[in-house]
Image (cartoon, rainbow, N blue to C red; front, side, top):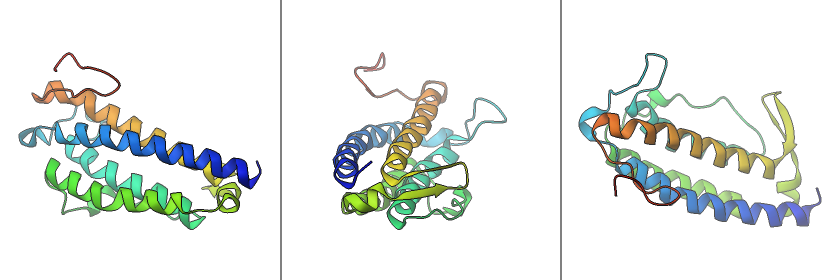
Length: 164
């Protein structure tokens, strides 16, 4: 991939991530604050765990891509300040757009540069932006699947919801 191609793809993916952010914020806002310990299974994260994981790891992925290297992922339990859906929304709004702005400012050369993702894959940085989107959508979907069981309502995600 040449730098011009990487920049064009990067611009497209940044816009896509920005669109997904709005949906993620709607899902975070729909989480009932009185059921944050909900989990559908002992192996699944709690709702609070996901409220912490989504902003923390979304920002970490984007910042790691902007840095050109990955360090150990953060531990979601380290975000003791996220205790409610409102806290998660505030934290998300603070860290994720700033991290996405770092991606937006990368040159085509930086986006085309190969980054090692923990020995699992070595790909152009721009490919990892797509991975960051998939990560966010995956965990947002996980959390949205919890909502009705928690007594909440599922917001429109890619269209209307039966709850709207």
